Length: 550
Image (cartoon, rainbow, N blue to C red):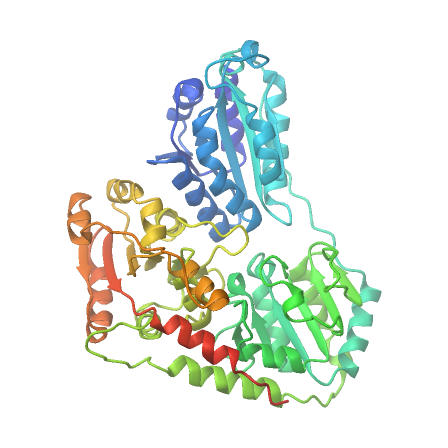
């Protein structure tokens, strides 16, 4: 068989289900081989960036890698933003690119560039196939690295002449390994720190949404009552209805939730990535006692220097703690601050939740209605923009991975292609993408992909005719903002042109019914909401006046 056929067989052996992408001349042999696969489905996209975002969403929802594919040169460069986004958000992903013949890689030649070198800074590993017999090892290594904690992207390049070579090599059988576990003596030390803490608190990050860690976290909280603050990407790791859920932190301003963190005499971080919410924002005086529990040792940072690190499989560590929790004995804890924090945040969340103002649609009202329509296991995907801040603060979750927010690399354009992939993974759930008018237009071409696949998704565009988040930040810092306005298409004609259902909501009172209607329609639906972003600066002013009563 050809090298290209061997590559397909290796991917099949690894359990790859989807490859999203745009093929080219240099990976034609691979595409012909892929066409014969009975277990891998190729999804043709309209841009390579959309393909990468689809693969990222698949990886975050399943814990297994999908592949995104592009050809050499511009095909590869078009992939890189989505690949970087997935890698920093710790989504497992396989990146496949074609390349010109190995006989011309050393010189100036049509569309030739060093693709592997370009991908190295934004992947866990990147390599090229130079000999057919190396394919099984390369694929096995790439998939293992992509899945291993912390997950990320791995890149494989296949030159067109190597793809045609005959080979007798065979795929390697995947063999899983067990992740290492934390030292039992260190766990005992953690118990001692918990015994003496009067105001402990838990800060949960992205890692807790993987490997069923959230179920063990909930067991721990049910026994101890210790409050949980989650980052943007850890929404749903504890149920928003639980008394110990203290909601989300991550805005670049002091929020209500920060008061509970300020009052804590012990901070237990679980699966915490500091890229989500830097510790200088909650440990500026270096005074917090910290227990770091994660798959990997703590990143070195002057504001994050844990007294104790429990390094190993996160679920196992929590399970071990839960199995021995009786060793703690009765401990008197002051949970008054976390009770106040939860109560105050609940008051904030209720503000405008029932708003029926005639000629304005506030972000708070939109998200309250979205939560009413969405089931506990339905999935919301947020793009990047001002709406992301409102979703992070006001949209609460009951299950992990039911709100996907890019928060590491933070690329715009994620949520539409991500929603398409989510509908493939969970066709039985309601899938909602929320994006700004700027972010939506960055991958608007994937509307055709959604229609071709008849994806049952709803995309809600918050229209403000500007780069709203940049305007918000400039206004906050400088007292005014530069010209960030732009024009938009006629949204309903755009929906019609792509064969989508289309709805425009001008009044708050109509939003919930429109959402219900859109979810009942077959195929993709677009909802456009002219959003009242005057609420942005009102929120900034309110947060700026927060004084914590400890």
